[in-house]
Length: 79
Image (cartoon, rainbow, N blue to C red):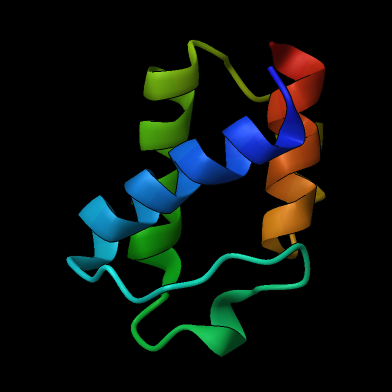
């Protein structure tokens, strides 16, 4: 799976979690960039990503997530 495919599928996840279709994901996008992205939304994003991509993140993976690019790399490592 390419990074472009991962971003496309993550965009769908963000649309579902935030109930918005205007969010543009870039590697540097973080919680500070999206209104309403709090710890509960973070859990929704992570759990939905694990489910839809068929991966399981380690604690080390989760500790290293500071932006969408980090999430994309974690998914790519686990696929």
